[in-house]
Length: 267
Ligand SMILES: [Fe+2]
Ligand SMILES: [Fe+2]
Image (tube, rainbow, N blue to C red; front, top):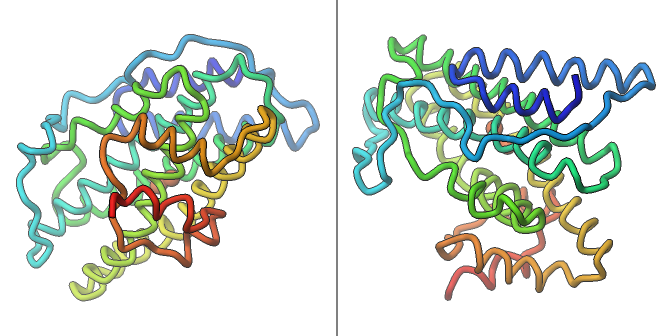
């Protein structure tokens, strides 16, 4: 199987637990072949415009989503459910970037980074699904945000745009908001959720870093100024301003300088 075929197989698997199990198996095959010095061929494949999704959760436009109140147990379950949904989409986003742009000549490190990210997102989804089940709920029990795949559709033919919007805006946003979530579960005494979110928080720094690394690489290849191109692409594909407060510390660790994101706040 080529890497692009593996990516498409994950994208076309609907059930969350099945998707993440397949994703982890394919990641293991990729890295086993890399370690053996015989990398799998990248190949080419046609990824679906939208990944397969389970019948539940029901997907609602953001304005119809019930408001979350993390002060009570139901609100905290809703928060875990929202994170599980983000992680499941993230699994698909990382496999999608591999398959969607498989025709662009890239160093093997490009594939290593996104396969590793997809593997970690699969673990993150499972961690969140475990927390939901421990609380007597499950992924699919609540409605979820319908707009999650929009960034992928908007940037389906623009590799730099994909990197700008997905890892460097959306995943960077995760770095801003995760410490607040960890605090909510600390206060509630949910140590499993705290440990899961801390794993997510630590590994997401890497995903943002891969985004900025390859964004800079591609700008260098085409002799473009990364900061100017980043501003142009985020304005083109991301239909909102960026919202402070930013986690400047973790963004710096991930190679995102302040002059990339502050000019996009609209202030
Ligand atoms: Fe994640
Ligand atoms: Fe991520």
